[in-house]
Length: 37
Image (cartoon, rainbow, N blue to C red; front, side):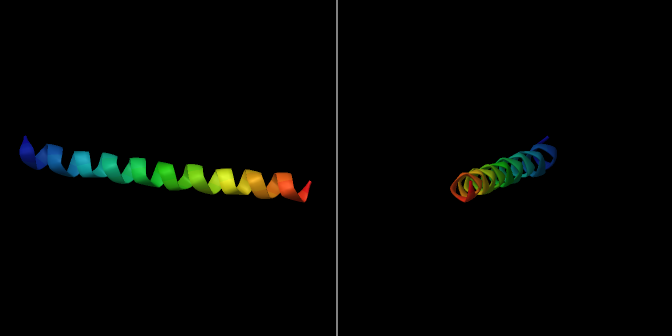
């Protein structure tokens, strides 16, 4: 169980981290788009 759950949990952490980065980038992109308008 430990061998299965360890990579799974680290994968979830990486997925959450990537989602956070993607959210910040889209937020910056939306701000830039508002400035251009």
